[in-house]
Amino acid sequence: MAEIQLRDLWKYYDDVAAVRGINLDIEHNEFIALVGPSGCGKTTTLRMIAGLEDITAGDILVGERIINEVAPKDRDIAMVFQNYALYPHMSVYQNMSFGLRLRKTPKDEIDDRVRAAADILNIGELLDRRPKQLSGGQRQRVAMGRAIVRNPQVFLFDEPLSNLDAKLRVQMRTEIKKIHQRVQTTVVYVTHDQVEAMTLADRIVVMNEGIIEQVGSPEEMYDAPQTLFVAAFIGSPSMNFLPCHVETRDSGLSIRLTENLSFAVPADRVDRYGPCIGKEMLFGIRPEHVTDKRPHTDPTYHDFTSDVIVLEPMGIDTMVFINIGETEITARSRPRAAGQVGQPMDFTIDMAHMHLIDQETDIVL
Image (tube, rainbow, N blue to C red):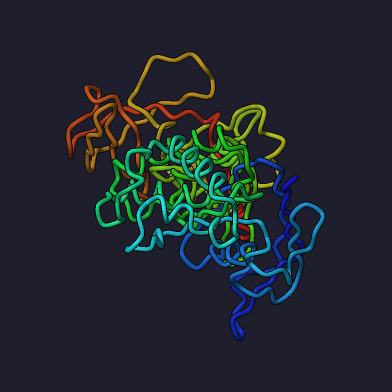
């Protein structure tokens, strides 16, 4: 079994704490994505699991074994790097088999493993080529094949798609997901691209300034962020945020965004938001929940009008930029329903998907 446990894990570089006391349990065969901006500690965490960085404090366990002092080659962990790290003078076959040859694995077994991995990765016809004869996507497949032939307990991926063009990244995401379904092994995948994390992972770990902000499924991260950072980081385009006040309204509450614009709080949230009456808060809503005006009877839907600032046609829909008060927000519109720049346009907002954030703590209520 290849469960991974991180226990109070710290990493200092001189006086700078890159990782600050994180705790995380990764299940056997689980695909976990560590995601966050540059400098958040995700790659440092991955390198500590691999044994490429010393641990300042805390423990890393694979299965029931503490591996803090175990040499990287003895951890039964395979790592796929951002820059492929292929030997240019070796063929694809030789690159994939190199680690097995170092371990004195029998030739027949090496051949079986290499060809099986090549079949999984659809690179069987490339085994005699050198890296310079391969495309970026093919080189990444070879790097993954070199890891697969080892049959490790754990795969570590360090931003493996960042050197590829946009179309190839999408294709390789699908390939990596297929490979994980066929090669059932625990995967820890580091990326700064939240779309990669959302599409690949069973669970996402959002990191920020050396700590874990939230752990959960892609759906949980998107629908129920726990902090302002997670709400802003997950989702493309990003969530809209507007300063607001919570006010009493008839028997319920309302969110006041400007002097002339307020929306009723959904009835099932009135008790939760009651303590916020009169406080300066932050209102969050995703672009897809602010749309061109549509017929509706749901009490959580409300209409308003605003002037169009910019239109961004995206094909299946159009991003519409508008102002509410002094804050610019993004709405999603059907292409033919989008207005004209500089002209007023009618919108519908779905308050069932609103988020209310305490500006003092950055906690989503």
